[in-house]
Length: 441
Image 1 (cartoon, rainbow, N blue to C red):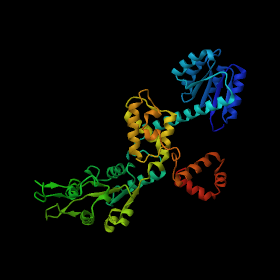
Image 2 (cartoon, rainbow, N blue to C red):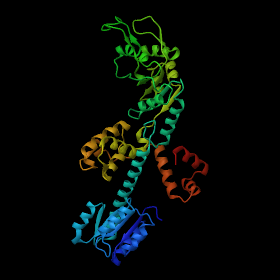
Image 3 (cartoon, rainbow, N blue to C red):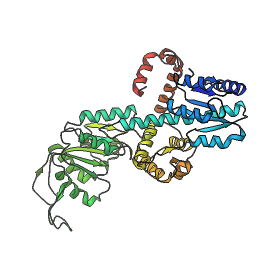
Image 4 (cartoon, rainbow, N blue to C red):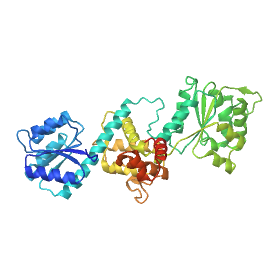
């Protein structure tokens, strides 16, 4: 069978049947044509079809009845009604009953092929959405991280392996890639899971208050310190503290943090009593901490203390295989009981967008789009203007590594075996094996 798709054609007019069959085969599809709808139904029980072209006016079973039978016997088959000019109203009625579209007679071969490309694109999207929703319904991932990306999975597995250790963990990744989710996952997989998980956004706290926020203070330590206050490290005793944007901590406070990492000891601001707590430290930064080291904004000894285990999260633009999964994950989250889908035109815009804000930006866009899609279908007009009007000269650009993965995947789909794929790619089979393993192909 041709991998472009398998199409069923049912029409009791021999000329129309022949024209459809020849035209679709010329476009690269595998086609089964039937002049008798009863024969087509028998075949439907044995063969799976992507698309069914069904004439509206037939005997002994008309197109409306055929539509119902196909929906019952092969619900994933996309049905197109073939109609003459005088029966367009009936074709529209068929669409209300579940047909995707109608093809009006007469038509030429070029029109047929262009029309069929639109139908197969819709069909593939429908199948993928069904598959994604099934995966989402069946998935009970304890990490709460939605991904099929091999590198992302490797990093999650590393997080799992070190979760129940005392090693400090540094999580690197752009804003919105899921650093806090990974930190929560590490905590949940550790023996500390029933103790506090305390989050501190180091960039959101003024420098003058950060030391007190982390380590606490005593009454009278500074203006406004009207009573004793325990810091976040004491609150986290027995559990985990997550220091987000750790590179923003001033050098003066880094000294005190380094001491804590070495000895698990500290003093509150204005106090001379040394306190000791049992806290696991996970730090995160939206830029490489090695760059901060070179810039002199982080101490070298602190850098190596924090960097016992480093987890690097790839940006969403390098995780193209996760886009659809994330779109429908968040649609499910925000649509409630409403069944919302995405039109092909809107999906094209969403999948070529750069997503500089990563997963967090996807979440916000899906929340907005789900609210605006009153008819249950997200259209381009429901998307933010920056997605609607994205620069087409740069949209869809990917990293060299992502491009290599996409090209290898395409060659593997087309080649008859791995030896032929290696020959086409002009690499030896062993190299192809390593790249398949690297990219999860």
